Image (tube, rainbow, N blue to C red; front, side):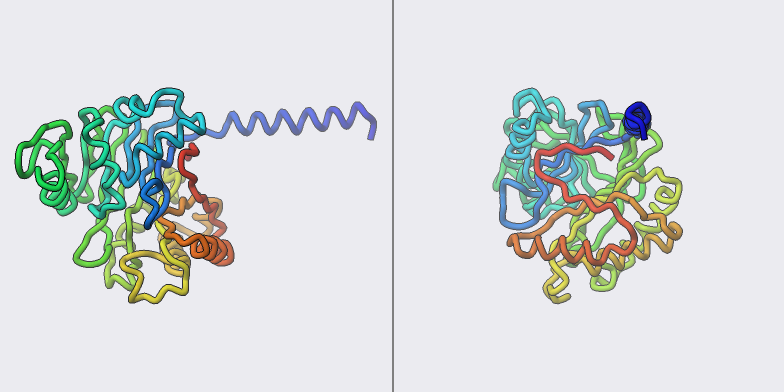
Length: 319
């Protein structure tokens, strides 16, 4: 092959790559503020989510806020102060359930925060009002509940399976019930931006262990969106490796149970519907050897061709 021919081939390859990158369109940008479940209070479940090319973020759970924003600033995701991200970029919070590793960042940062909306289902909101923002364990920064409401936050109760607007964004949300350590309930949030969706699951046990149909009902609801390629990704927890006994799962998933559940989703949405589909793994519980084992097991058991993503605190990605 002549030098000219080689240069021409290189030019065509580079041009094709640039063109394909330009053609790839994203609907959501994600900035993880915290990604783990467990004992690391600086890195607990919280995911900023916004339409691409905007700063109108909703925070999916709020275990860690300030430390996560600082990490994102270190990584040059944000070029403003921590306070400005907290007060201006975060437009509200979607809380899946009221366990402390999903709400502690919201509580601790509330005195420094600006007025915005906190969204949760009825049982979750009752727990936050009665046990956290109750003028005893913490000042009531909400506009409902015990004590003297300071009315910084608007507490909006979400009705299950009903679409609700997310204030000061162009996104909407629909909430679905999840089973998590009965009688505790958790929530999945289907967030919509124009005609595209992302699905975030709070803590959940598998239907098989929880004696529930909640996950099957959720998969049935989102299967048409997956089939139509409108669903851009699913955030779902895997807290323990496969060796964890069922009686000690405490409403969480293992790689085995995740893959069982995703096979059900594929059955509902069509063969190969999950090939190259983005599954974002959340709530990995320390110690590090368990996390390593979970990743190895998921890699070995990924017979659906999933694109498995392990989010890193403060590192932005798009869906």
